[in-house]
Amino acid sequence: MGYKQQAAEKIASALGQMGVDGFSSETVSSMLETPPNPAMGDIAFPCFQLAKALRKAPPMIAAELAEKISGAPLREVKAVGPYVNLFLDQETVAAQVIGTILEQGQAYGSSNLGQGRNVPIDLSSPNIAKPFSMGHLRSTVIGNAIANIMEKQGYKPVRINHLGDWGTQFGKLIVAYRLWGDEAKVKAEPIKELLHLYIRFHEEAEKDPSLEDQGREWFKKLEDGDEEAQYLWKWFRDESLKEFMKIYDLMNVSFDSTHGEAFYNDKMDRIVTLLEEKDLLSESDGALVVNLDEYDMPPSLIKKSDGATLYATRDLAAALYRHETYDFAKAIYVVGNEQRLHFQQLFKVLEKMGYSWARNMHHVPFGMMLKDGKKMSTRKGKVVLLEEVLAQAIADVQKVIEEKNPTLANKEEVARQVGVGAVIFHDLKNFRLNDINFSWEEMLTFEGETGPYVQYSHARACSLLRKGNYQPNGTVSLAEGALDSKEAWAIITLLNNFPEVIQRAGDNFDPSQIGKYVIDLAQAFNKFYANVRILAEEEAVKASRLALVAAVVVVLKEGLRLLGLAAPEEM
Ligand code: ARG
Image 1: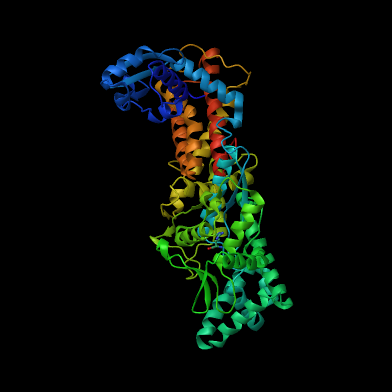
Image 2: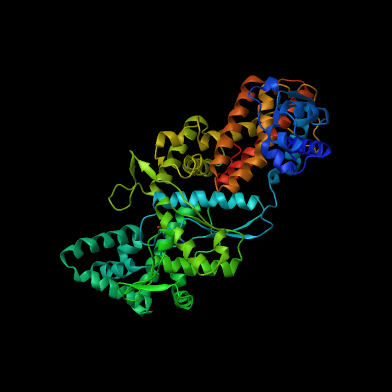
């Protein structure tokens, strides 16, 4: 239990003695503030909200309340105007926090909020036969971090790669391949070649519109199970997936399911039947739609006039499938903000179908990746290919290692961990809805707010433990005064806050909370390292300070892991 919670419980029980109802320790905890200046105390409890219940002025209440609160980890309790100010006994808190972390190790900060319930997370979900875009990178990185965080909270995340492997574009691609394709070229560079064919299709279709009809015909054939169409489609899918796997392997991301859109092909008739039974379908220009006028939304398109199904239809089928398969606590879709309307419509249609569980579905949107202030798109040749980005980042890190630490063991693996970490962190340190400006300089320095900076700080801390011959020995006994610097206290309060930060990150699907937190902790550690002597101290003091460093190592490593970054011990 962190010290804030301990303080909240003391306040709640004192309020109980004063006969005030309705202030649980959770409520009190959410009311706690930090005094503007540390000389006034570590925690402040404002009494304004109690005035009504007690029919007294807040300063009087504060004075009465302050009398009733005492005991570890508190050193002093003072009423100051309408506030009760609490002073922590830093040594008691330090021993508690460090002891808990060293005892629990990587489990520190875990909770059982989720009680083992499933949370399907729809993430990454690139489109077959197209380059893996920056948007899909964002979805992969954000979704993977959310999955890790929710797992830490006791949920069972199910990572689903809802591949874009179905739709009219495959009809076009089949037509293009049959006209101009070359098997060897596709095998050599599948994504590039398939993209060429797709672009060529659109160029030629401007001159010869009959190609569009052929594309539709071939998609219809595909949906009806035509052998040649199926064969080509499956081949395109397999080759594309192989390419995507290279990226996932580099990033160390894996999936529990790769059921893409095509998986729902035989599950869509049921959706149409259900919608009919519930009398929700209407006709519009020969197409079948669900009207959403009452929500001020355009209708959701279920079936085109030629009978072909759509993205929305497949998402409806997927939602039902996920509900039936996983009986989820929540279902999450990590998909760009430009699809906001699509998900609003999806959830409304499910609601109209009478599914109350639709309330537990969340679209977790994110902003765009910009380059020079403009969207990075795959169509216009402006694209920075993700594989190239990762390769470049790794190569840059390799160069730095050759300069600074050429004898490092495991150089290649460390370069991969740090290069990929740089790219991931560049994304996750920002609140996901903000657009990100793609910048090499900003991504790859070992200083400032970057992944390599945090990883480097962790490695420095590890090296300090090695040099100090730190021995974990179960019990932590801190030498008096060893941790009474403001630098040490800054670290201890941060360490104490980690569980709270995880909870906030989980509740808001917001990994950037952890991104910012690990930067703060790395900075606090580096200040401590720069200003407080550690190795040159006498044994008991040294051991106490190393215990603090060991706790920093545990929490930095765990914070990085939650974000999807490795924490090499040397770099
Ligand atoms: N493949 C889609 C795209 O690239 C994203 C799919 C997101 N997931 C979903 N269930 N719709 O735009």
